[in-house]
Length: 519
Image 1 (spheres, one colour):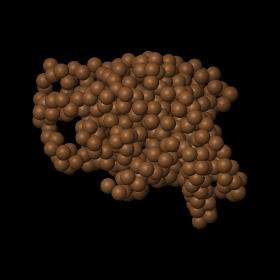
Image 2 (cartoon, helix red, strand yellow):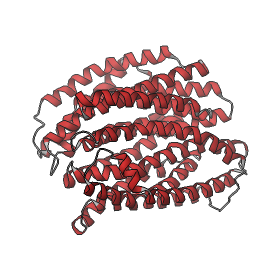
Image 3 (cartoon, rainbow, N blue to C red):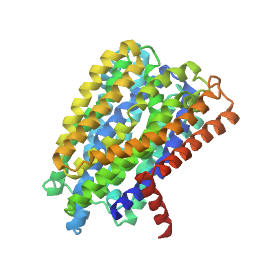
Image 4 (cartoon, rainbow, N blue to C red):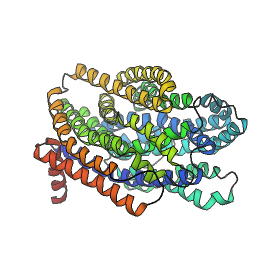
């Protein structure tokens, strides 16, 4: 019970910080869409930022954090005197590798961009993208070290600073556009400069919190330390798995480069809305459960570990399923309110809404992936998620090729969702086969109650969508209270129905909330 409360508490901390980051991220995208619209300039920036951002997810928090936490947690549990040395060695090696990789990325940017946007023929567009990517590439070095700091702080049960870090990226991009865009030609260069500054400020934010935990940094090239070997042994297959998972985004942009101009931007804006609830709850829970899962495994409490996995899966369904329905119904009002102004037209809203509909179908699947993959990593089994991710990539590519012709960019989003559903299904199957502790009956019962609570919520939300014409720009005095109030009312109705249906997840959330305020 105490471990469940710790997971909920940590998830609440990460979610609160992530909410601030996501709100700033939406403001950032409103600034980008309003100033640049959806066209050549934004396509160039999104492709340019994809490269270092992909490598960040591949080498940063995607693999480094997740492979570091279980090993470091075990040292904190059984050999605390050796734990600082583990940090010194890992930091030295990681910083060196990131520096080399950043230099190589800048040198080979032209070839990387031409491979990423293979369908582009405009040499001016390609040249602009290369310049933007070279400015963005140092972000990889900064954010890789932030990911390591995140692993250290999370292992010490500190989640706030790493979760707040993305706020600084968003603030940097917003400030760059407002203060530098009128003075720089072409103005889109300010977005890349904002990325560079965002990476640097995120790293600087972590330093005082690390110092407060007594974490110091010393150069140590001890390549023979057993902790480094264990981290590397986990990181390599995990890197393949994350590469396979992130490759879906690369495939989508590659295939979208053969579609009409603006398709890449439509997918990007839809993905930004999709990632708001995903990052706020699903990713936050994934971050919160890893230290708990790792500690339980290190202490040999396997029964508590499997109970934590089952609890986290039920909790993620309780959060993501109503979010999925809400996004599907309110996709046009949300996109209209947030992005439709300036150069972003109603046509852009409709095109982005098509992609958002298809993305939203898999929000629950991504939530399950975040929980189950962390469970495997806590068991120091990175091979199973890799195999599953590779299957999911093949599914995404094949369906993408098939669906992009009749459905265009929406077909690519639908292929991505189908891939995620295959991924979570296989992870659940293999986890149950490994532990025999996945409680299908409890999960099914919980999902039935969730579905029953969603029905009246969806009817109320549908009234909001049908009660206003979401075609014109502006009208914020009506749109903001109508949409915001409708979302809040829908949430209240869902929680009320869940209470009447005696949903255990809601009851536990309420007890945790009350307990957190009475201690």
